[in-house]
Structures are given as structure tokens and as C-alpha cells.
Image 1 (tube, rainbow, N blue to C red):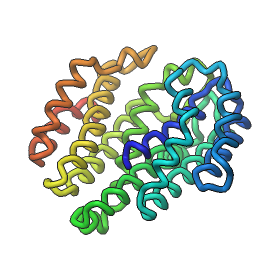
Image 2 (cartoon, rainbow, N blue to C red):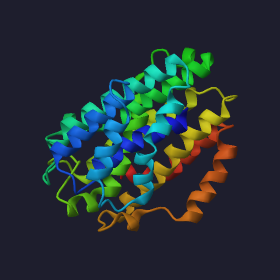
Image 3 (cartoon, rainbow, N blue to C red):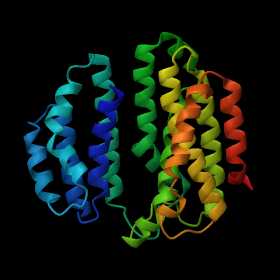
Length: 281
């Protein structure tokens, strides 16, 4: 279910990432995709114009994903009605939200922190909400633990998106786009990201220890974000995301560490403490 959801969100991201498409074309394709997910129109009414619009797109894997949208949706429709409703809600908010922001693309950046928070919500915070629904449908213990802490799910998604925005900012700038808020320094953004990561860790700690798959899934994404932001904080300025990209060996070492760490709240807290100090200097 989670893997299928990732593919659906990746389709939306592919449309957003296509620098050769105008804002109007992106909005049109996003609307067609949403209609296909909601079963308002045949999926081919999205796939065919999308493939035509992306005929010069440089990533063959993402083109293949677009072409296989019918398969992804068929898998979605084998899931429980509760999970399908949650996915439809997520894709609706994400598609409509991205369509709104397609029209606001510029090199100066987003208007303020409030708009930045909204962008991070529609792109990733809503995915945190979706994961929470799926996890809660699977684990009633997690559902009970989350009562009163629902906003932590949004922070989890937003923290991951803030990491992507900061990491990708040189490439975005090169194509005339910035998703960072105007008049807010990188140091300030890193401090905000740190706060989101604090909430993210609290979210992960609410997942029952017996649900190690859920814990590990979230802690892996969380940890990679922490380590990436730490590299960004230490470099201060960089001209390419490759300069702050984690090495394959670092990723694999952390992947191995997650097997042990998710069994211990203390280990996860220690990892965060040791690897996030540069974010608040």
C-alpha cells in the first residue's frame, strides 16, 4: 500500500519537476491525473497527453511510470475502501495544491514563511497524514497513541520536503525557480527544519515497538533527512545538490543501523542529538 502510494505521488512530482512544461500545462495534467485517480475519467485520458507533453523529458524511469499509471491505479483499487479514500484525499490535496503553486513559480521565492509552510504541506505534509491513516488502519495501538498528536504527522512530511527544497535549491535556481521563502536566511530555515525534525522524531516514537516495519520505514527517511541537512549546514553554500548528497556507503551504513535503532527509543534520540547539532548553531 505504501509503495503504491509512493508511485502515485511520484507521478504528481514528475509533472511538477518537468522544467520544459508551462505552469498551465502542469495544471492541466495535474487535473487530468486527479480525475483518473478519482475514476471520473478513463486513465488513458491522462496518460496519452502526459506522455506527449513529456516526450523530451530526460528521465526514462519516470516516463515508464507515467506509461504504467493504469497498473498503479489497478493496484490501488484492490486496497481497502478506507485506504483508497485516504489516498484519494492525499492526491486531491497534492494535485490541487501543486496546481496553485505552479502559477506562483518565480526566482524570488515564496512570499513568506506561511506560504512556505503551505507549500510544504500540500507537497509532503499531506503524505504524512496519509501514512498515518494507513498505519492507523493497520495498528490500533498506534491510532490510540496518536490521539492529540495528529499534527506531528504533518511535521514529519514537511521536514522531508524542507530537506528536498534546500538540497535542490541550486538546480531550482538554475531553471528560474525558488521554493524557499523570500527574505529568510538558510540558517533560519535550518532552525525551522530542526524544529520539524524534533516533531518528526516524536511521531516515530509513538509507533509501537512491535511495529518495527513502520518504525524503520519512517526512521530511515527521517535519518537520511537529518544527515543531509547536517551536510548542508556545514557547507553553508553549495552549487549543486551533488555536493551535499550522501555517499552510498553512508546510506548503507545508516540503513544497517536502522535495524537496531528502531528497537530502542534511546538510540533513535541519540542519533538525532549527535547528527543535528549543526542545524541550530
